[in-house]
Length: 328
Image: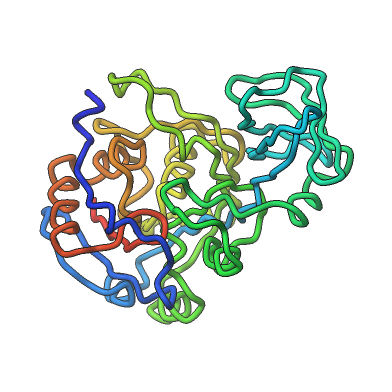
């Protein structure tokens, strides 16, 4: 498969720059098992769940991963903390006019950061104080690059699900941003069960594919954990994965039997699904692995037709945009 097979044109004004006024006020485009399309509101999701269902939520919490600092020369530098490795150690992307060499130090306010060495695209770094405390004090919300405004106070709340619990992600599991507590309560009132897992979304979600042959792409590993209680709830129920991250964790478990670890599962057309029956997701970037996953789930022609429909109907796209409910 070629990367160009997963392309589409999107008017820039349809890229949502801010969330809806209320979380559950988004629109919802449903693709049923036959490929038919239905324009709905997000609150209509409750019409399609009952006691046969389990919704699986990713409870990862977005950390304030962006840190602005300066090199010893005085030049500006940005550290994008991809994951913490301990109280003072982390892996980070570094953006600077000239990346600092191993052994050098940079400053984040009054905190020293030693560059220990490269690990692929990332740098292993050591802070002179606790990383989590530094991020909370000086970090910025890691909004995606297509959101053009600087992080605001509202983003700290809205680029986070209401059920976020386990810090570690550098991007939000955006399908979950549509839920408020009232909507979750209505779903449980219909008899559906709600289960949780954790997959810490990594910087790879922002990275463009650099190969034309889709099968040659390799996903960045991301940490996941599925509680035993969740695996029990999956038995003999229809599984509705809330977001591509929940789906990848569940399908990793189905393939490996491992409830915890690292996953680099790449889902593209031809993938044989074992765990997930329905997917709730947002609209994804052209040529992205997330779009390929949706195409694997519902069929490439169905998804691209749905995207053309969404553009015609002026749906809002990407992280702060509207949602899709996809029946496999």
